[in-house]
Amino acid sequence: MSGVTFNWYTLGGALIIAAAAATFAYYRYLQEQKHQRSTLLNALFSEIANIYEHYSYAAHEIPTTLEDEFEIQKRLRWSSYGKISSISDIEKLGFLSALNIKALLQLGLLIRNDDMLLQQLQEKKEEITPERLKYLKGRFKDRIENSERIISELIKSYPHLHPIFENIKSQFL
Image (cartoon, rainbow, N blue to C red; front, side, top):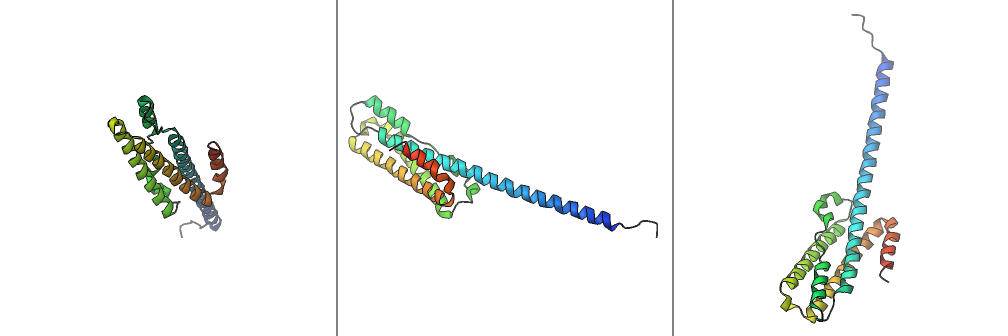
């Protein structure tokens, strides 16, 4: 033997340090995952609540008479919502149920269709009738219901969101 001695204490200490580092890293990873889910949930909830609020105003503000063309065109422009940013990274919303993800995707398609209808009415002003404006107002009320259903499902899984939505709803009573 060449004089090298094996120190069990050093090996044991190194193993304990390695295990502690691995445990800490895993705990940190779990905390980061929880934080990311919470951030995504807050962003999603806020966006759906914003859709609820947007269409609550838009449904109320769409005129149903043809008295003021400028006002009609202004309200049509203001009523467009645009894309739902939460669905651009849908794979990050894996913490939601499949039904919630489907409802969110469907809401995105319905909003896209509403925006296309708004664009069409802005481009072809002669096609604006009281009946079409009432139809549009009804579509907006449907978006309110669509977004409220998604919010209700989120609240079932995450009850801490309930008071936030109640506060938003109270603005429209």
